Image 1 (cartoon, rainbow, N blue to C red):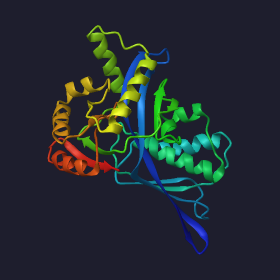
Image 2: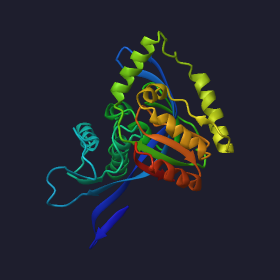
Image 3: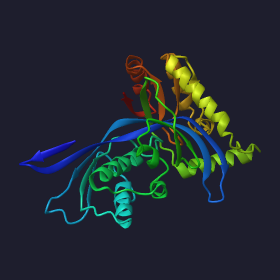
Image 4: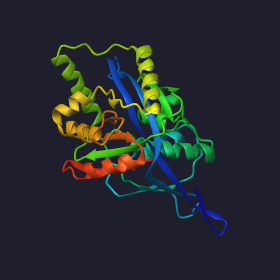
Length: 297
């Protein structure tokens, strides 16, 4: 969205996408230290907003202003700008104001969605683009969130995407607990759990998982109750935080067709229609471990 003042562009407003994983299967660890995965991604627009000011004489260097919550370390937005300029894109200095509302370490790809929204706009505005490899270096979720896909099957480390078709007509209730889950630590703990149980990690069975994804989408589109969705991190995180078992009880009691964990992060999601999710939100908001709830239409 563009705003004008006396015929001159002043502000550009962008809303960032986020994602949930309807399926997340972690396969073998690769020689580069990463793991192969199979996942079913689902994307929606959320409330985090970028306000960009360009072509103003007083802007001589990029300026990033973050409102709402603190983000430690280098922000993905500045990394994305640096990567595009390094690739040869002529982008002027920008002032970016980020209204940050969604917690880090929740598994919904909020930071990646901020970068994806910026990359999409810079591509349309300046013809600036990164290679698939360049986008993957910014973060595993950026490629999907910057794509035109609503739903996708993800393979490799999440960078190999194929269209999974139309999403079910369901909304999300996101429940953010009072803790976060750091991705690298979650994978390390999963490896330790599997070694301790003397289990070999699941070898890739992408044809089987793809068939399960197709069946899952069919059931959700028909309104069939599915329950907990497959996520290899659930056992690990529920052992540390049994509040996830309470979350399952609340989701089931609400009559939700499905629920699960958001990627390797801490957020819990419930699927359903808006009325069901509004009722469920009251129950979750009363839980002492729930720091924040948000319905995504």
